[in-house]
Length: 469
Image (cartoon, rainbow, N blue to C red; front, side):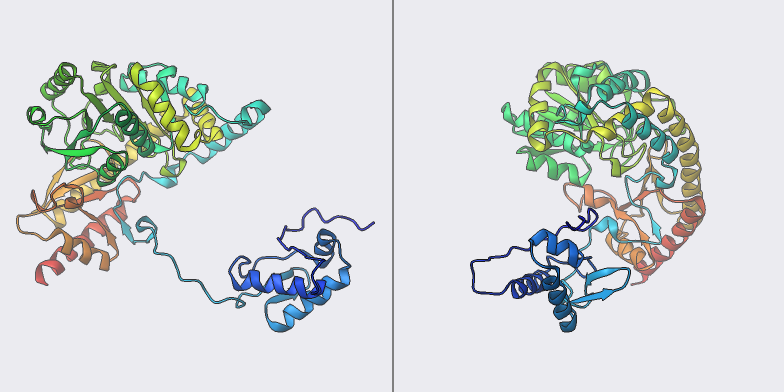
């Protein structure tokens, strides 16, 4: 009996032995069709003639002859040592899909929401992964708890209480695929209870508005000034929830003033309105004392949301919401229906880093580096764009730059892109793009200080280019 090649790649070929067509012809025809239709990609390795013959239950010589014919026609290429592969030119190239905006490389990339990815604690993460895999019982690889692993939820409850003042417990936390999914699940749970309208800061993160709408709620804009959301204007609107970013307003960087925090909580308790607190980057702070979570003032009125995207890396897709007791079941149900639970191994690794203090050590290192980046940004703007006003830089990973009246932020962003500089117009995040002064948003967490200085110099040239056009 021939030995079975356990390393041979699988391939879908179906033979109809009742048809009048020969076996070799069927093999050739199906492989040609697979290549022509794009199911067998250029360069992919086909099974050896021996392995495919064993798979199909035919003589090896039939497969050898089929491969030889396909090679003669240019569909496949065979080389000693690399086997038989689909020819790189066997099929016409497919049209390239439109690239995701964040994948378009820029020489100076002031993209929002990206920390220093080179600082990701690879060694600590790898060590934690090994510990988790070594100690994980086999049963834990079965279907996960859609709320998240009990281990991570307990670690989060402890850490959020210690570092952010959040009043919660493991049974009130839902682990989500980033805060985006957490927001979607909370909004869907509110909609299922009859909510129809949610107040949102204006400006606010554009994608959050899309998420709110997809969940079936109507977003209602409430203006933001240098002291945060205008709480006095909330009474004008009949809303069932309010989404706020009190520690570092997204995107202006304003901090919700103490009197407004008190007023917002009092209004929410009086009206029965749910507050959703997005605490996305509050742990990156430089010139101020830490500001505790709004949730601590009214745990049964506030949904607290956080993420590992700004502390570690967006690619982890790990977020969480700490909920009032009456929302836990509804949000857990929405999470379970969305994806049946987030990946378990990453959750356990993050919990390990938290429990061993590795996350705190990582944050201390990155805070110092990010403060240097922030200072480099401020100095470069003062030198090259002294007419611009810098806002929201006491914390976070981005800054808002208010441009002089009359400046065309879209023309500037376009001119900057031509110079290899990614910046984002502030108006993208306004409900009415024409309202408010022109501005740009600059994320600095993923760039070196020299790159920041060079990028701002290029941005200043782009401003000149746009003004002269």
